[in-house]
Image (cartoon, rainbow, N blue to C red; front, side, top):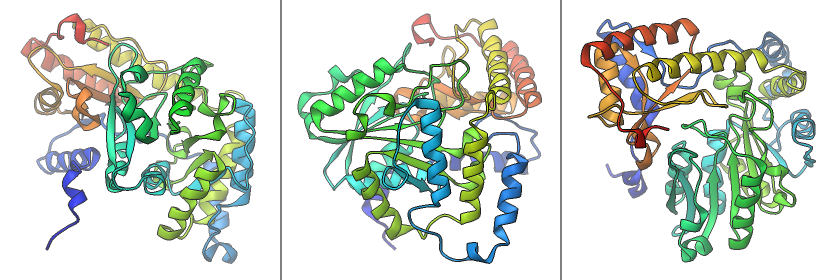
Length: 400
């Protein structure tokens, strides 16, 4: 039986591959130290769980939900953007709840791109920007992001490519490198998009996983950005709701309308009790210091890991946001080889940087959304393996 030709252009999904590898090793009786996937280790807030429970027994919530999303959730999202970014959003036209931001990102390409169109995609990056573009039949043009800042160089994009592009994906704070940007960068990105008539998107998944004020500004803080910009927000990281599948698209009303057309043809809406819980999450998240405990713990785990690598000669700074340490492979290895070394010799599971693009091939990504004792256990296991095999870093030009 033949499948669609566009599937031939898709690499196997990285995290599905890692899950299969973990399952295989565990069937062999291996005790693994898993640091590969960003699934928060803490449970969802009890208040949100209770809201879900209460709303789930209401017969009114057993019917198809509204395609626009729950009004209470949209209003809470508008209040969130006013509070954190001083950005005014119309809950009726500029906010769209989603079955997770990953799904919305993929569907945005379907909404905006025709076969043969061009989307500007960062590399390394979350794979869905590229795969969504390919599934829409469009062509991804990759923007290399390299150390030390992991920023796109807009001047390096050929003029004819920039003028032909219809969509540009960015993601700051950045997965996988942990890089951050200021509002001046977003102004520069917006000016480039404006000059070339491009819809500019920020995947703001790590908006609240930032370790000091001012390093995770919203793209929509740029004046007039709603003329052509969209931002995605996910409840997965900020509120420990990865399995709930809830996200938001906010920004330009015309782009929201186009995305909603795709959503209405593919999905039947989001279970209302989940949306009620999401609205509560946004209201609770307005409290001072609400994210402080999580962020302190993530920062501590990142400090432990960077300290371990630096003790063997790396030169890694502790990221100021996200839950990732982006580690250059040691001498004599690339990211894939290093991934297998850690798995075979230390029983530590990390993500090979190649899964995030060509520019990631010399790296691995290590995630700290696992209990601190798991991070400490992984460090102890890696210490034994590094000492036994005399692991040393690449020359300094490879360090972040």
